[in-house]
Image 1: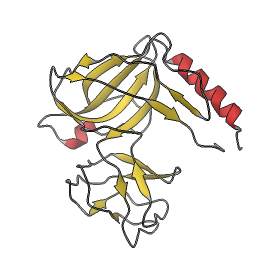
Image 2 (image 1 turned 45 degrees about the horizontal axis):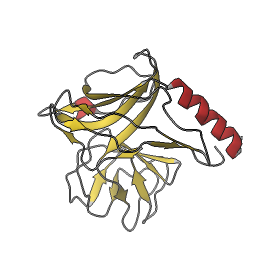
Image 3 (image 1 turned 90 degrees about the vertical axis):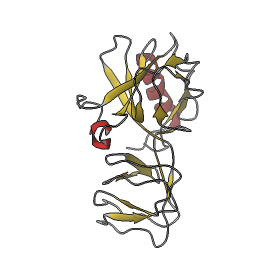
Length: 207
């Protein structure tokens, strides 16, 4: 199936409606805790376990504006105080009842650019340009819009290779691996003010 932009916009408007007055909850691993404690769940239907809730935001009565060109942009989201010190790893979006999960978004403080010579299908190490920020075991990146890279071991800022789960697809040098959302810093401090200046959800053409 290859959906038109009109069909994708209709889907996004339906998603937007489910998030009216809903919640945006940021999870990760607590300060001093193991990075594996804050790894994103396998999918949005998977119950949470060891992840720590760091901060909770709430969407407006109209969570997003109307969809256009396969994307929706959130209306203003109020700043709130951080509930626990830790490293943000993913966001869980919930309906207004605070319990029904709508979607998960991966979250981190950097993107990764694959370095030469790239990595073949099945590879468990990917060469990258020096990381601008740490990445953590269990983090998931999207490459080229349709390939997934899952980090297999923590890597510090400055690292030039990343251990990953065996790649399902080859990745070429120069390709960019991205989180769903990139923040200036994934480190959150208890009681600090946390703001989300912009949130856009988009879907690729031809979904």
